[in-house]
Image (cartoon, rainbow, N blue to C red; front, top):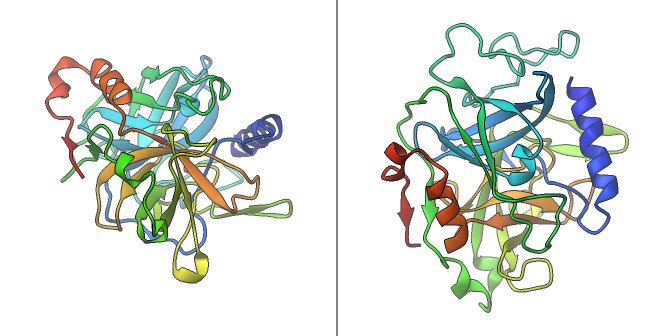
Length: 294
């Protein structure tokens, strides 16, 4: 199942010649992420219940899970795992992780950190139409609540705007978290299927690829930084270092099929996106969505 999913992702990379395709896993100088228990590995299924692909995302309340629009587009249901090593024991022969049940089930005894969903929303993403405003945000409403010590927090509208013309952008730090690939090239792919995180720095908020809708960051592995790759799509971009839980964007796309160079996240600190999120969560959950000033 995963081999088929990877081939689909590579095909997407080939067709999006400008962008290089949707982004995936944490690369470079990454560390295991035990800091953000609300970051989950989400698996999507088609209308026949067959595995389609995997992404990452963030739980904003016990049932509201934020991811990318290109993750929720064209699928019928989902399952989300919140274990740090959700797919680390994946057996390529059986195509199952016997500890977590990834990607086909929630293993016995994991019901407190794994659940399903048949309520998926897409902000309007479709093949990067309308670029740079790709509308690359998605929501998964969980069938059962996941109780955690903390949840992701959203940055208030326009939180990043003041950084658009800032000098010394290399000093502005962001942290990415996700379950994607850690290395990919034509001959070798490395995937831990574990939640990893890495720091990067701001490149641009106001060029042709961002234009107020996307956040462009870059990694300096020599400086202890890292980036994103296939499978990190939808995972959070936090403002600040590893201890931050304030989300300013979701991992969206990259320019390189080998996951090198710069990364792009779809900004969630925009009033239209925040309004859409609030309008698509159950009424009982709206007061639990935290929106804060940076």
